[in-house]
Length: 167
Image (tube, rainbow, N blue to C red):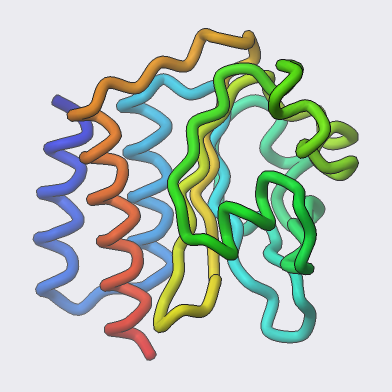
């Protein structure tokens, strides 16, 4: 399984000398390949502003997104603010559904993101510092089995460990 072997590769990397950027890139690439996402993005907190900026990614039109798309960390009721504030992993099957549509922020709609996504926040010592985001274009096309979700969470937790080790 691609997720499990990716986790093993990262575990091996974390015990050696490693570049944080390389580890984060490997995690993003592992998520992308294993889950067959159309796009995966790692957003990281900007030290100068209350936003997270797209730093690493793979997939369709990624060059338009990296460095350009910013997720505000403001206190609001949009889905991403809630994910970060409450530190919860969320799978949204259809961004157009009645229950979630009003929680999807303008920046997301304007950036041409997919209709279904998973978001895994990166929170250290209670502070939101990043978010893994994986998507597919068609509503309902992203289905994540419980075992796969646990492996995605493990990858996110490895990112947390790597960041902590580099602080």
